Amino acid sequence: MNKTLLHSIAASCTLLFALSTADAAVDASIARQTSPSGIAYASGGVGDARQDAMEAIRKDYNLQLTFARPKSGDYVIDVKVKVENAKHENVLEVVSSGPLFFASLPAGKYTVTADAEGQPQTRRATISKRHTSALVFYFPERN
Image (tube, rainbow, N blue to C red; front, side, top):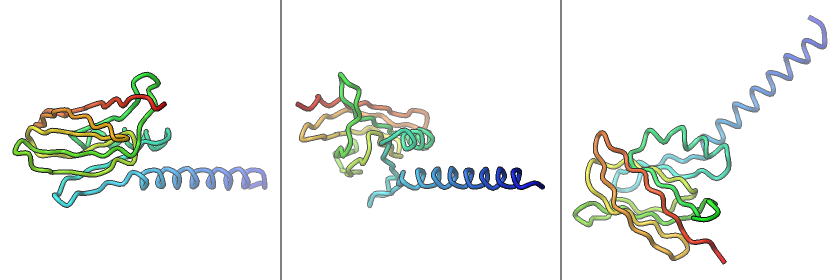
């Protein structure tokens, strides 16, 4: 083999390794976690790569929340998320690190409260084996 071909192969291998490492780093930044009550959840989505990573795992979760501004569409982060079951028992209470938050809940009816910047909003969600609940919370623009 000539030197040019060897250099091209080496450069290609280096690039592929760098890209696969970057993908692994993005996937690792999407922390799949479990609450003390046993609820699996994930949050993230800041930046295109992390948003793509969250979209790739969306199907694994039956509660899917998005936090955004109504006019600009800008995403909102650091949102306090609280989920209560029909008995008003707290099943999940965490802070979403990104604008996308997903959780795997048992079948049932839930009250979901999202609080960004001291502005709580509440929605109802029904989860079944065949029904996923996707909710969007719009928080007013900052001044």
